[in-house]
Structure formats: C-alpha cells, structure tokens
Image (tube, rainbow, N blue to C red; front, side):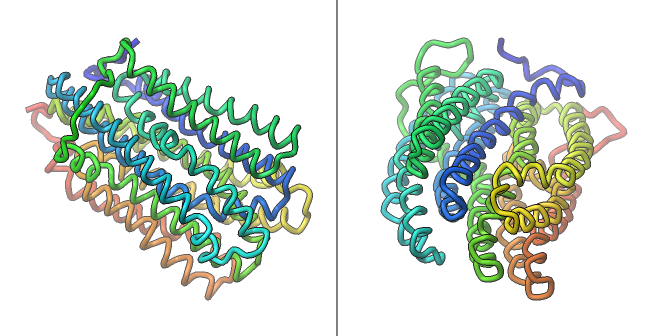
Length: 451
C-alpha cells in the first residue's frame, strides 16, 4: 500500500511511517557488524584491524550512491508535491542509471588504489595484505552497494518504506548466513567474509533494480532516460551534505586509525573497530529517522503547507531528544556485553574497548540533532547549508578534536573527540535553524500558517 504523504501526521503516524526506514538502516548496520564478529572470532584481531583500516576508503567511494539517493529523492518528492508525477519519474530513472554508471567507474578506481591507500595510512606486513585482499574483493560489487544506498531513499519517496526494509532484510540475512558458512564452517577467513558481503550487496542493490524495472504498485518505474545534467547537478548538490558527512566520517576514521596506531598500536585500531561497528547501530537509528521523515518535509515544502512543516519539525526534535537519552544509557549499560561479542578472547583488548566505548557513548546525547538538521535542510532543497553542517561536524570539528585532545588527555582524548565535535555541530545546526525559520516558513506565526 502506498502512503499518502499529503495528510497530517500524528506522532504515532510519524513513527509508523519512519519505522521501516529506521529498521532498514539498523539492519544494514547489523549485517556489516556480523562481518566484524566472524572476522574477529575466527580470523583474529589483526584481520579485524585490517577490515576496520580499509573500510573507510570503501565508504568514501560508496557514499556517492547516498548522495544521489538523498539528493534525488528530495527532487522527486518535491516534484510530486507540485503535482508533476511524469517529470518526477523521469528524474528518478535518470538518476538511478547515473548512479550505476558512476559505480562501475569508482569500482575500478577503488580496486587499483586499495593497496597504495592502505600502505599510505601505515598498514604493514600481514595487516597490509589482509586490508588489500578485503578491500579489493568488496570493490567488485561496489555498483550494487551504491544502488542499495540510493534505493533506500527512493523506496521511501515512492511510498514503499516497508518494501525497502524487506530488501535490506533479504540482503542482510543472505550476508549473515553466508558469513556463518564461509567464515565459520569453511574457514575461509577474510576472503569468505568479503564474498558473503559481495553476495549480500548484489541482493540489496539488484532486487530493487528488478522491482522498479517491472510494472509495480508505486508511481516510480525505471525506463530509458537521457542524462539531464542540470537535474543531476542539482541532485548531487542537494545530496552533497550526506556525501560530505560520509566522506568526512571516513576520512576522520582514517585519522583515528592513524592516531590509535601511534598511541596504542594494533589493539587500539581493533578496539576502535568494535566501537564503530556497534556504535553504527545507534547512529543508524538517527539516520534512518532522518531519511524516513525527509520526503514528508520535502512534500509539504513543495505543497507550501507551512503548518505541517512546523508540526513535523517539532515532533522530530522531541523524538530525537528522547531517543538521545535512551541511547546514551544503553551505551553505558551495553558497553561490556557488546565488546565481549567481538574480543572476549583477549582480556587487555576487552578492557581497552569497554573503557573507550563508555567514553565515546557521550556523543549519543548529541549526534541525532546534527544528523537530523543536515537532512532537514536537504529536504528543503538547501544543499549548501546541509553540506556545511556535515562538513563542519565531521571534517572540521572532529579532525581538530582528534588531533588536539590527545595532546592533553592521551588516548581518552581520542575517545572524547566525537562528543566535542558533536557539541560544536549542534550549536551550528541550531543557529542555522533559527536564522532560516522565517525564510522557509516553519516559524510559528500568529496568523494562519498556510497563508
């Protein structure tokens, strides 16, 4: 059933609408985590460190798919809100084919650059060999991974968030089952983990491709389309904030690995990997909500319904505040049991990971507001402000923190870096929301909001 985005959304209806997107991003994170669990327990901490070392490079290139999906879905949803379904469908088709073509080009480039990048970041010996093997295998299916990213947004815009969730579940279960077979039962180590991920990505990107190529119950259907560079440019500019966030996060991840190698050696890189794997789930909840609610805001903005825009914004901020507190508490309570899943075989590594996790978990109190703020301005078509929030949040604030804080606090300064960066980012996001409230019309008025 296709959801009517023009109606008023109560708090319950908003949660129901965004729940599939939240579940989709969380489940996508979970099946990435499974790779880490199997690699750590069956291949050891050097292999785990190698996966964590090269994964940011893979994410930098794959984030182009997220940019096209989020930026393109805002254009498609806004065009629908204006009442032009035909033009919206043409834009959708053209952007999907563009994402696929770019994915092939980036896959070739990534395959060739994997070893030089890993070596340049400081990997040596077995860790360099493992990182190169894992990275090159994953680049074989990068086009499908990018399509999976893009379709996560387009399923929501098409009013089919439940179907998007079903696809991610299918991809995730495929990956998990094959991890158990290839890594656990057959002992194929890193190569097996990469192969399981390859097949999962083909499922995650391929099934939506087949669905939209065929006649379906949504208003979107893939068909031949010529490149419209103006629309492509607008989609990329509008979705650049999400790409900037992912690229910056990946670059900062590389910097974290570099700093941890200096301060704690290979154990620090492995501990950071565990924190990132499990912390990814907390971030995915916020990202899923932002992704799920953005098409609603884009639609209402296109329809010039200021009252509903404000209603969606206020409800969203309240939900994020409540969720932030709950996630911080969960992070403190679950730090040890989650870490044990990965590194129970090494007492010193376990202790380092649990301590780092509890310090790092402070950022859960803040990150949701910045993630939502960036997605909020993307949904309004303001890619510049959205990208600026993401750029400052990760590349500027977090880079400065991870370089400066360890000079005063040692390794604890590394774990605290994200929290300090998120605090600065929330201040910037709040300033932009307040300054632009009148321009976009979500400021509360004494007169009729829909005027």
